[in-house]
Image (cartoon, rainbow, N blue to C red; front, side):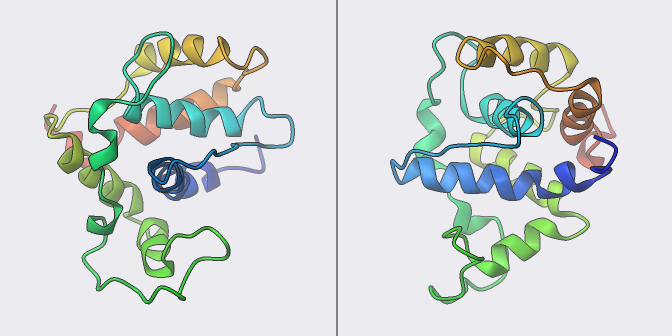
Length: 164
């Protein structure tokens, strides 16, 4: 919304790494917001784009278990007790993802994990398809036009894609 000019995009890599980390640990994760229709759905859409084949029913890609979040940051692995709030994510990792180039760091890491060519993971059409898949599970998933634009920008406007 109007209050959220850049926060969704800024925190998206942290949210995605949180989901990856906890789902790899076989934990159940609830992504929620005030109404569960807009920003929470955006985080789920981004996750599904990265971690699931675009088909119903949704399931994780076979390669998902091999995503290694410890390779995101070039910094030394933080101490186990140096955790960001109660997220179970290292504070140094969260700080790297929140830096100005956090999205770039995250997207480079995702390309390394998936061995896919350096082209965007999603575009407007693929985001629409994923939204249709997500609405099979959450009927009132109705991200605003602004939120969909932020998702598109998150995936499409990385400097690593400027050659395309």
